[in-house]
Length: 115
Length: 112
Image (cartoon, rainbow over all chains, first blue to last red; front, side, top):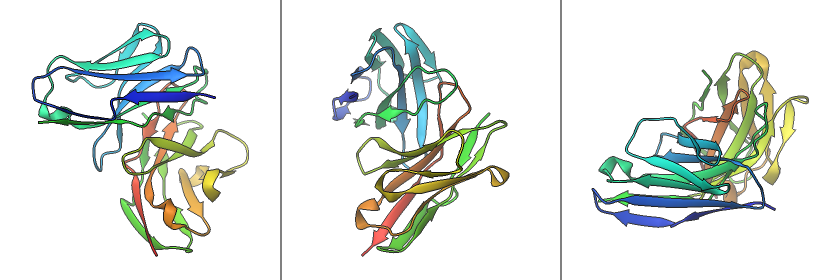
């Protein structure tokens, strides 16, 4: 079976510090990978998605970047955090199937607080 | 562009009562629809999905949803709510690409 891991679970960082959140998937190969940010009352905002190693699509211009150095590893980064980067970050994966029948499976999330 | 509307931000029901959470979508062709549930501080869990065929789909935890093309709706239902169903529920849609569009969620509170 497939599992998805995220770490850390919680993180408190000062403004201007760097960020690295990691997501890994086990039990599947060549998944699509996604980073979302969730703010209270605003649902899920797709930040980045990737259909393969080194292939990153950015959905929203922002202070964050993503990388996919290995097939089942997805990293969310920032060089200098802003207060507005606080939120709950979710990683998800889906099978790389054409035609849209791609339900997504979510990790446990990382709660980021920028002070 | 596709979109999802969940008109109810908060819903409160008594344990044992029936539940219906509303979801309306906007998409020009046949959509693929999903309902997810999120407990506080947790990730999202898939409850059920609709791709094609029978418009009434069954999911986990006793939930079901009905796809109504004429109303552009995909409402989630449960005949008898349990206290453990208290959570936030998200409806989402995709049109065949790699991306899901999510509604803003409905927070369910269950009164004992």
